[in-house]
Image (tube, rainbow, N blue to C red; front, side):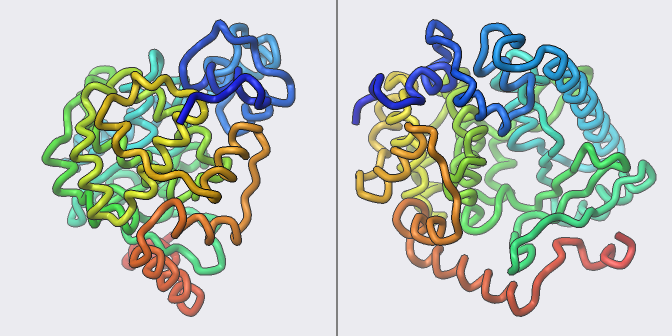
Length: 349
């Protein structure tokens, strides 16, 4: 399983994104279309040496200020929740921004994902409602909101910041392998401004990345997660317990997803030394479905369709019991779509 060759259109781009190799030439205008999946500061940092190149410098600065505002709103929200006695763990993007990027503003987006004890969900809502936070109408597929780990976004009055309230680290099937109690048992406190915020261990943050990529079925929206994965491995790769990651994935019936993530990163050019021996041992077998997936990412010809997603689930992501359960949840949602709002606040939102 070698690194990406020089022939695919995305070779230099992937070396910049995953290996942080800015000796590679800046991406072409067509390749910088990937910037649409990123904030402008993020794209300028990840893709270009000079943001005035393929990206407009004024737009980059405006987006940077926007990201700074969202960062301040999210930090303030965490401070207010802590003052209210909420035991929140910041997970996913907020944690990546503060742990794996030299400036959090590079990575910050509008979603603040927090894991809280089930009995404190009401406390989160009551703490933020006076500031105008409300559950918003989120776009759902035909089967509605089927997550059993979180609620629809709880958004600020201006709609720029969403608090995603989790009672488990991520939706089924991940919490079969990594539940809230296990994540909390290994969390660490990280300095964020003048406060200390609880965040997952490097191993658990890595597994959350894999789970999110699997939920998105390695469609184009996974671009940000691939960059996060490389940033995590670059900064904290030595802290990942690959044996634990494999055990979590096995319990969650998503060992295929873990193997797909590792193999895809390697095919796209992630330096082999960033994975370590145990990480490499987890790489799953090759096959036609994976080769098709890798070819799309390598050639920057990504596509998403329900049919492709359904085929990828058993081939590249989940064991059959988990695939069947996901289909059962979708069918149930078609008959009785769920809103994703906690029952006692449905009429108020």
